[in-house]
Image (cartoon, rainbow, N blue to C red; front, side, top):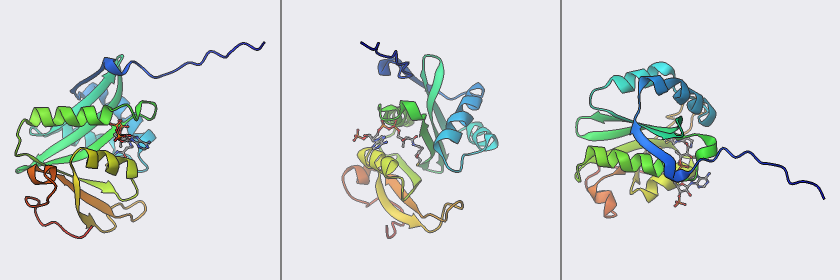
Length: 175
Ligand SMILES: CC(C)(COP(=O)(O)OP(=O)(O)OC[C@H]1O[C@@H](n2cnc3c(N)ncnc32)[C@H](O)[C@@H]1OP(=O)(O)O)[C@@H](O)C(=O)NCCC(=O)NCCS
């Protein structure tokens, strides 16, 4: 009888994932993930710029000393802009993006907070995730993505969207 092959799995224990602040020494690993998961990855300079903003929140998901995901959020006036969320390919579908978002809400610690983001219309996985998180589509930015001219869906998570309305979303537009 043939021996069963020993399959090396890269899946670490989900309970062992730590969410902490993103640090500059994480950036080489961030760039690696960014290039694996996005067709048009951010540059190192874009991450450095976002991390240098005093009011932003930048988070890392770390498993067994390896960076496996990250979230970048900037504050503009009273609104939190989720600029980037990514989870490395082999670690997706284990709740890490949800865990990063949960830590963001906890750090903002304001039930009146409003969050917004842009997402590619074709990114059904991300849209599903954000809808489950209480974000609602409230507009479109035409040809927002320069690589393929794709539209962006503008999504908001506010006290009103959590109740199913867009009442406190500024200038909601056609979706
Ligand atoms: C979008 C992304 C961040 C989600 O990360 P994740 O850690 O896999 O997300 P979670 O495990 O928290 O899953 C959230 C939801 O998305 C669903 N989901 C995740 N990956 C999926 C996939 N490949 N296909 C279908 N659904 C998927 C999960 O089922 C879950 O929903 P459910 O619990 O209601 O079933 C990740 O897929 C990613 O990095 N994608 C590439 C980068 C990107 O598109 N970022 C968003 C830019 S706006």
